Length: 453
Image (cartoon, rainbow, N blue to C red):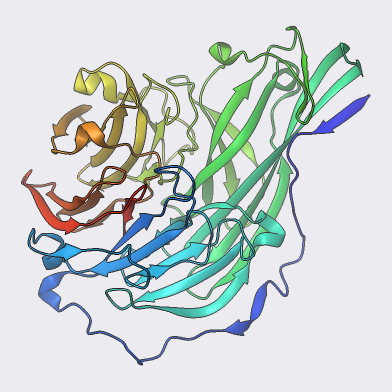
């Protein structure tokens, strides 16, 4: 029997010593005045820098914090791209940035490079003034140097990675498929006092029949902790090959079998006990069969009713679904399906690129149509209806790099800039429906804004 590793993983069973010796605490030097009570709170904007190709975001991430009054003011102009005008993270590629609900803190794990896998916490002081607080934590020995992670509940982050191993018998081309073993690694992070709290590694618990049928999981992401704070739900890019198909051999990727994606039984979520991160199980949706791992933006949210609402199909044209996981059963409610295409009456939607729960079972959605234009909508998860929110840039936008939608009270904050072109911060009052074209955002060749916190 021959085995070939398709993706390596890194894992350590000890937590001691993960925090780096250097501890950087914030101080009052250079601190700007907090926004006053009538100005809400800081809104941190992020922008992605071009490296090789326009819009690739591989040149790093810039941050700058503004107030609500600045965000809604079309006379306010912001140019973060001249060197030194904004904070630039150390990561050579686009970092996965998270923020606290009150806007006071930004969290980051460096993505690739010499500091890949280093977790950092920043106090937001306004403008380009961000002060590191607490320990820098080396998560790379568990999650690798290019980790996927999100804030899974206030004060807690969860990072994940997965590898696959194809098992077969014989020598190519006379090979017989056996199974693909998917091995996941998960770590929980204390965001208040930067440290790693717990880790685990496990084989994804497909049944023997599912393994023989060619099921595997190639990517996991977007973990969320439920309302009861006793489970963590991890989105999966579910895959299936045809084990009776004709195998091919790649010089570096090894032997593979043809895809059988059309026969996938349903969308899959990994469920672990929290905080132990033990007892992995799979839950399956019969309402959708597309990946729920998202891409850059959190796509699982807890509604006012306590249920988890989960977007699927981020990389699948035509299937922008939102599913529901029941808070009482911790399993899919297979009587529920929200279909954005149906709600808008539009074909060719290239998935829900980003969305954010607002309250009153309403949500704010960023979606694309045939990879040619980025659009906004307000959705109602109860009535399963959607209202398009028009902007003047929509035909030139795409949201494949977008990372976060800021929400505070009645307001949603989204920076919209076509690649290489200037744009604005758009502020949407989701209760009145008023859209304000606010602060002007300068841009540079190949760059764009990708988030608000």
